[in-house]
Image 1 (cartoon, rainbow, N blue to C red):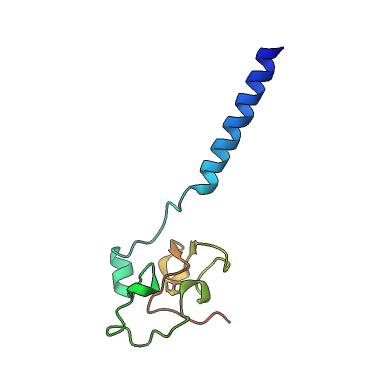
Image 2 (image 1 turned 90 degrees about the vertical axis):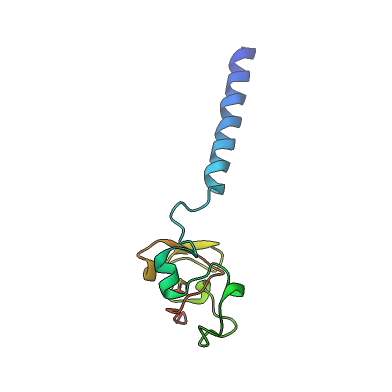
Length: 102
Ligand code: SF4
């Protein structure tokens, strides 16, 4: 009886741990700043890294979370972007294809 209870507790604990690991897993399909497609669109994963001399159209408050091509919610750290064929971008990022969410 004790062994059955111990086994149940171990299985339950291991399920919790693996579930947490899945929930914490970073996106596998994240666009990197160094990707050729990112460089072509001036994508940066953090708006603080924008070269405003090269992209003077950038304005304060613009970021991926506020872009109509961002397929996530304001709460998502990253989400697929239509400009990158559905690969995920950071909600704090930006690129020259930015369009205000309507
Ligand atoms: S198109 Fe919008 S959501 Fe996609 S990377 Fe550019 S700014 Fe971010």
